[in-house]
Length: 225
Image (tube, rainbow, N blue to C red; front, side):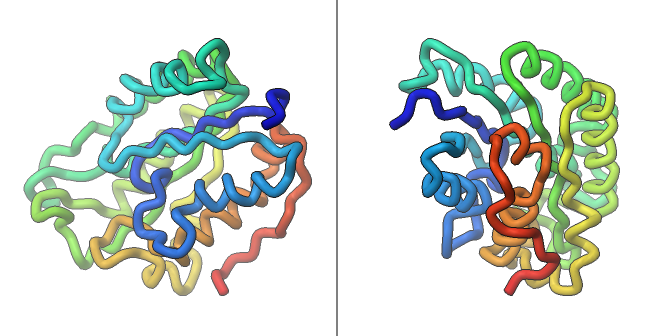
């Protein structure tokens, strides 16, 4: 492997892990495989953990790369953060206590972005929609698109304050006529079509491509074929 290749850490929850995509392992795995065909493209490390929220990522983000081979004596060139949907869930009932309040989420995110920016270039992705009709998830967690919209707005504002590139997801996916069919029966995870949509959006993200010094390999199209 070319040691001069840039290194991108993608850290987050089950969306980063790729849960639900039985065809290609998730949008991040699609990105990794896409870039692997280009010897000049960055190396992607996928560090998604199912169920993680902001606080979990804040505890593990730094040690994740300190124990990994080529990154042991250096830091990655960039971090792509995709976290927050699990923080929106309300416990026990639709109006129950959230896993993390919107204010606490905003405060924790501001701290995390400040710490991450001391080490590497940071980019952030928004939140995916949910199928409210099948809630609760795991018989106790209530997700809603209204909450996801509020928390994504917190994400966007924090990124604006920190001068961190942000890729909105929630409203854009809701505008797609088939978005509901891109969600797994559990109501919160994307299936292969949903991950494909995310991948195409990421591959057209100018902030990421400029950092990677790459031209778009495919143009983003608003539907999944």
